Image (cartoon, rainbow, N blue to C red; front, side, top):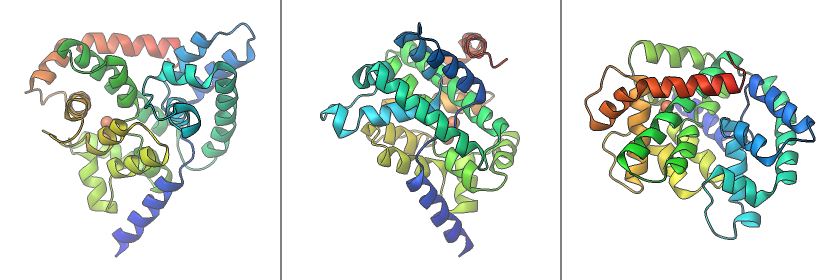
Length: 270
Ligand SMILES: [Fe+2]
Ligand SMILES: [Fe+2]
């Protein structure tokens, strides 16, 4: 009975979620760009591509009926071009303002950083896999991978000490989505899927978000889901390398680390 109540609360939170918090380091960088009249569209794109919060909202807005005209938009840059630079600046300013309010709620910066770091690593790894295996568009894979764990935000906001549960699962080599289902009757895949529907993400985003913990998934958008699953599993359990995707990623491990360092330096997060 208790599980049902927690599940209902988390389902409600996923349905009601309006924005996702942004790391303070990224906020500073974005403010700097917005405050500089010589900043260009590309300057803003360069930062936004590393941020789940702003990327997800821009993808969501670009896919709204007003902008999309029925065509799914999954490239972040394309989404930004569709909306327009001045509009984007307004949206970002508004998001940063709301972010300030959200931060006053429950989320710890250290938890947000953990989620962000994991998501970027999965995005870099999945993009490399896509390039090496010639499966799907690498940029498309990058954006969806950045958002694959978006449902975890609902747990960070709705469950006391969720960050500790995530760290414990990692230490014990357990699948967090199984633990979530056992403890709360819902996992971050389901919560994320609700967000993807509410925010009108492209259809395949919803499939990746909903199924990325499913090994050997064979349903719709299977190549995409399986690449994100392979990248995610490799980063969570690098010792379990026994698939061709895992072997490719093991070879590319230094490349992923270097890319990560480059991003951290660029965003001044080191
Ligand atoms: Fe996940
Ligand atoms: Fe993940």
